[in-house]
Structure formats: C-alpha cells, structure tokens
Picture 1: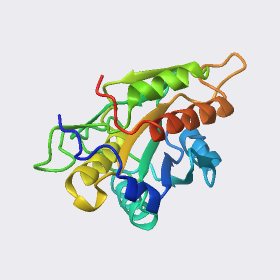
Picture 2 (picture 1 turned 60 degrees about the vertical axis):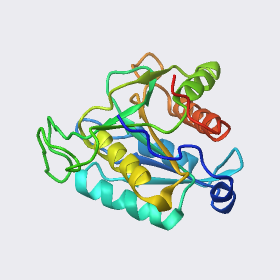
Picture 3 (picture 1 turned 90 degrees about the vertical axis):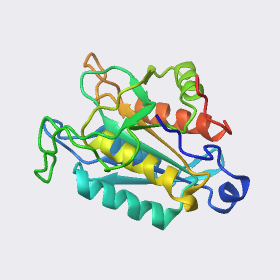
Amino acid sequence: MVTPASASPSAARAAARPTVLVTGFDAFGEHAVNPSAQVAQALHRRQVAGCRVVGAQLPTAFGAATAQLLQLLERHQPALVLCLGLTAGRDALQLERVALNRDDARLPDNDGAQPREQPIIDGAPAAYLCTLPTEAMQRAMVAAGVPTVVSQNAGSFVCNHVFFQLLHRLASEPRWQGTRGGFIHLPPLGGQGNAGMPLAQLVHGVRTGLRAALNTPAPSQA
C-alpha cells in the first residue's frame, strides 16, 4: 500500500487556501435520502478550526463522480478533502483507512455502469492509505458521543472509486503536495428506535472529526 507523499499540509498552502472540501453522494437504490449529501450541505460555509468548509454533492456514478470531484479540486484548491458516503446496516461512522484500486459493482450505478473485477487506474498502486489521522479522529468522535470505528475496507463501489481517485491525484500530482484526503462511511438516517443515526449526530460527528484532523499536523499510522 502507498501513502501519498507529504501527508502533513504545508503551512504556506494551509494559510493561502484555508478551505476544506466535504463531499457527499446523491440518492441511490432503496435509499431515497442519502445522509452523506445532507451532512455535506449542513457543513457548507461553516467554519471548522479556522477553515472554511465547502460542501458539495457528487452523483453516485463512477465516471461522473470522479469528473465532478476533480472540478471541485480545481475550483476550491482545498487543504483537506473529506468524502462521505452511505453504508447500510450500520450504527456507527466508519473512518476508512484504505482505498483499493478495484471496481467490482454488485449493482449498476445511477448511470447504469457496472464495472466488475477491474482496476480503477491501470498501472496505479494496488492501494493507498488515507492521509488523515484516523486514530485521532476516532478518539475525538467517540469522546464527543458519536459511535465511530476505523475500517480497512471501503468496498468496491462508487465510494471506494472516488476515494482511490482522490488519493491517487494527491499522491501523483506535485501541485497537490500537502493536501490531505480521507473518507467516512455514514450509517443511514435513523433514531427514535430505528437503525442508524439522527442527522444532527452525523453532522456533529463529521464536524468533530474534521476538527481533529485539522488540529493534527501529521496522520497517525497506528
């Protein structure tokens, strides 16, 4: 596995572009509402640890999501990127540590694409490690009352695809030196006896994780 170079952000870049990009996905499958997009929207234009948050929604589609993510990177030049996605049947947030160079979709995406058992980028590393301090983020989120775990597998659908594309760009293009990136899977919206988590708690958890990441200069490799 490869860790993108210069994981800790440079002081100059952070000072010049104090922007954090947070993305979520649109609705997909049986989920009429995708909490990842709602959390990104809730954080849009907020201030976290002295940085301005830009929230954006990506389509749940392999090609279109990547294209939009790259456009957002160019437009906002963020110091940190946190992508969010939905994982069903969970009651905790999942901090993803590993992005795999593999697409293997059990279902078609929203554009009808269904890549099976194929690399995301030919010739790229088999995997990248997240450059956010996942352990520090987890500790802060749990201390804030938000159930959070660290995961070693982001799946093989659009979430992992976007995660890998992000880390590949940050690792392979010198102009992104110092920009860090990561991914959090969110449980479905719930509460009041249902599986999942209320939106307010999801927003609180992601905001707390962002603050911990921004206040930790180098990612934990624990």
